Image (cartoon, rainbow, N blue to C red; front, side, top):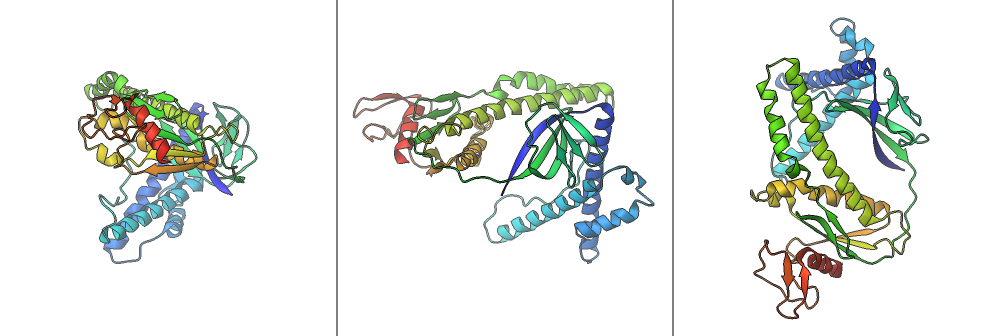
Length: 377
């Protein structure tokens, strides 16, 4: 039994949007209430309340201070309290690791949620039914889906989360599925070299272009970012300008995500026979956070999504019966000749063609690196 997530866009009417906003607001209010109660208990030297105690307090307050909670599902507040407990659990885990010298950076103390940043989301549990063109949630009722026959109908749904991004509403469900053990792939070893100009270059000759989602829309993004500050605060024009900016950011992220999913799915080739799927996929163990410290290339590196590429390759290969091997980041794959092994120590990054001074082979720099990665696998 494995857990798998699915996400689809909802097609809501005005009444459903209002009700969805109320549930998201209730989840945000409950999270902030629980965080405030935990801080007060800690300062008073008392035992900090957990999700069950906080939910009992909420039920008592419904009769006096927050009667509007009766209109909404109890799941919104319950799951918000559980998220708060999980946030503190991870915070204390990172604090313990930092004392041992195994964690660098901030530990992530939970913060109060503000509706100015985002509407947020709300999670539901219990009776959730999935149909071909709709999904039924507690209190929200039957919600139409824009994409039909995508969500699994005969699987056990553990939870469902509604969220809003740039004016569009989405549903994410966690499904418990029976997964059969995949057959082992027996194809050739493939080396994959990631880059900025080209997203991925494979040793079998396949190349995937980098869409450069941020770079191509950077000037338009700058103009759109200036518009909200030129509108009067609290006006409808300012809200519309902020929504337009949010849509721009979502579109850039979607273009990047689409390119990554298409490239990783083509490399894994899950639908092909065992003999045509790669037995081993070799990647470089890139230190992405260190690469982002290069201020000249940080924007271009972040626009590629190298860590996300590796994450998708790993989980897709695991489901397809393929092995992923990581090569040390110090291995000079771009500077080593794939034919004779000669190393060009002084090869600059701007030189995109590799010329071996020992055997005379001439190859594209990324293609030569992919050949070396495949040989090391």
